[in-house]
Image (cartoon, rainbow, N blue to C red; front, side, top):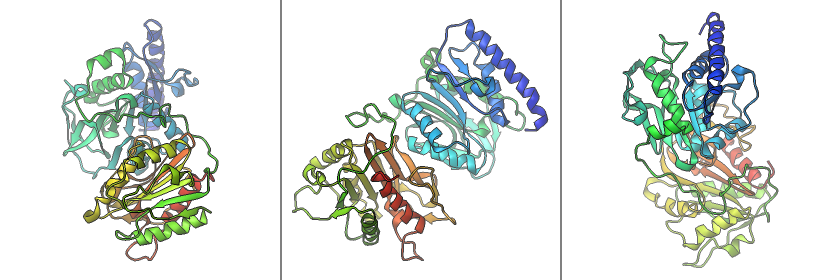
Length: 470
């Protein structure tokens, strides 16, 4: 967008804001829709158009940056925002917390790799995958969904990103890939995520393309669960949202600093053979020793549970590797109670296709926490996600790893992604902390005798974070 056109857009946006303010004074206040958009570029065009388009709808819109006003004191029912490469980790956590508290999000993925990376970092913990498109153009079509009912034909688009995720409903597709999706997580909120190409095209730079306008308005109403919008749109049946019950995460307090664990000792339940575990185990023991954690590797008698409340009483950190096809029914309960009491958990998952049953017990031990893993992550390029654990780490050159474990956990913060999918993640509830790592990241590459230096440092900093040093 040329600089010469921006002053006119500024006048249009200001007029829209004034019109909205006048209209809102004449109608009952509806749910608050917060426009978290800058006043430059296409984001400004979207904000200027939305402030006018939402006049008369059963919502109250606020665009603090355009109005030069402070943020509203009341929580927003929905936030409309754009991927922002400058958004820091704290802002992303706050945005995810907004959704997890049952509110709505309308999110546009901007053009370029920096925007896609930022979208991945924000949306990965919500089980949403954002991937770069292949760069080709195609004819976009609406998918069957209440939000798209009656929408006019889209036409040709050149998408920058494709969107996928468990429980999502496609809204628009190009060559069989979704470039706009709706997600309804029940008590964990709603989101509509769309690629920038769905909003603007070469013919429409100052306002959204006509085919998307009504869909955008309905998406905002649906995300905000406004009375008319929520009543008019029912999400098609899909997987039931996860039930987050139990004493550990009932109130989901904002995480804060923690002190050292109750005991500087680690209980180990890690394989000794197969699937590259000897190398992973050697690295793990070396880093546990460096962290001044006394290691309990004592084996239990056959048929007895390896993880018990009694053994955990003598430990401050529990380290689990995926090596058991089954666990005793008491073990997941002991893990959950240990975590709820402020215990620290390090879970490393890895198996080959022939031994993937090893992952069964690993996931069973995680059932007390809202975390699950699968072995369906494709190979690809490794990327670090901003977090206290990854601070100061760097990938000096492109690092690619084979397929491995993917983490499905709506509450966690990703640490590492592979091809945009979470391969390492962290979560804190109260004083309890957990880090889950794909063991493939810690294995030596074919041309190296040790795991990549950055991944060794990731494990080291993960342990430092678990024991409260960072």
